Amino acid sequence: MTSSPKASLRLKSDDFLFSSVIRRHNVPHATGMSDSPRRQSRVPAAWRSFAAVFVAAAVLAGCAAETAPAPKAERPVQTQRVRFDSTGAAREFVGVVRARHETDLGFRVGGKIIARAVNVGDQVRAGDVIARLDSQDLALQVESAEAELAAATSNLTQASADLQRYTALKTRGYAAIADFDRKQAANDEAEGRLTRARRALDLARNQLAYAELKADADGVITATLAEPGQVVAIGQAVARLAHRGEKEAVIALPETWLTEAQQSKATVRLWSDRDRRFQAKLRELSPQADQATRTFAARFTILDADDSVAFGMTATVSLERVREAPVARLPLAAVLNRGTGPSVYVVDDNGALGLRPVTVSAFTGDAAIVTAGLNDGDRIVTLGVQKLEAGLKVRAIEATTTR
Image (cartoon, rainbow, N blue to C red):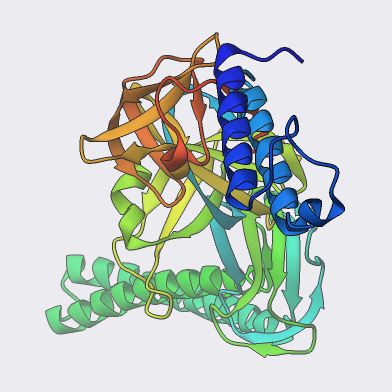
């Protein structure tokens, strides 16, 4: 190891100090030192050790002055690529698939159920029998109406014959006008009785037909509400029919999403096939909140729903806000504000940091919505931005994101 002029000068100064220490303790110089052991023993050993250490430290200091400082290592930082998108944040609501038209089927006459021809999940067509009542009493009513019709017909025949005879007698002057009027009234009454008997017979026959409950449309039985042997009243629900046709996803919306639901883009995803999405359209929004949950029922029509979308399936309705201008969602930890507005650190191609101001339109629970200040594909630092400075060389580590 070669010494610099500064180190040589320092060594000479140290030699002078060492010589001064020796002379101070009456130790002669090495050239004029006698051979007497008595004078050599006068130099303390501690002072000799101290002088040696002092000289060695001076030599090392001179060597260290010539050593160049080590370069700083690049600091690793976590980064993320900026992605601009025209769709906003999405919110998911869980609901159930229902038919647009769903009706409770019930008998139009009361009686005892003797048979039920369907079960839950059965496919039915219009006119298929759902259940039957005991029709014995209804058949007796039909027979009674038929007998009444026969009596009314006979009565009208007799009244018509009497009216014809009195008409002839009145023409020849042998019948009183009062008697003729009575025969005319009796004939009119017989005609009305016949009409009433015919209507009663039609009603009795209809009631007999009502003993069979039939489906009024194609669809699926989603519930059975009565069992054979049960006595039901007029209009009491026996089965629930979901009409074949449009299918809807029914969800409950909080009041904060009433306006957003009408302006958002809706998609439906089934739990049975989560990779498939159906476009949906808001058809009905309840004007009144539920008394228990304080939410509003919303019905979304599932467009192009096929047979794989079954009634009663669990469906997830995603509502996405549609934005006019594209925005980027950045982690909250990436935004830095030192009193001049929100900014982010951008890593360039050479690995240097640059502090760039951005325009933030809104802050959500986990992201900052940026509308300007960045370009699509920029690399930004997402962690530890408070301890960074512009111009610092860093080693970018791309963060892994999952959706």
